[in-house]
Image (cartoon, rainbow, N blue to C red; front, top):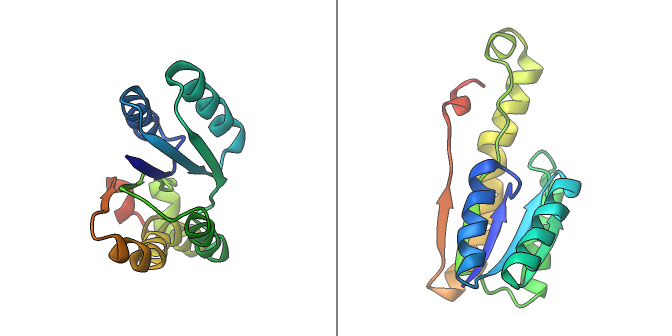
Length: 143
């Protein structure tokens, strides 16, 4: 399988990536923390001998969301599974009283998810076989 993970350095995503690498899946890691992502990618390659691609991904940057989908399409565009495992927790008490922080949480946890899935939709529809998994949390209600 070809699997793309947005927010690849989250603990849940990293655990999933280990399982998928163990069965020989091709992986595409996308995250904001490129240093941690590089360590994860190296570990997956060395331990399991699988193909691991890496991309920079910042859910707060709408232009980057579209660009990463374009790079996926340029690389052949096949995706069997997309996992969205990114989010911004923020601090609840602060978010209740800071409209800028509340807006950032909404941008990352909701708007970026909609933007990314909308950008991926034409590619996934052409394949007729892709699956999407989205990890959510109660932090989404904070904004």
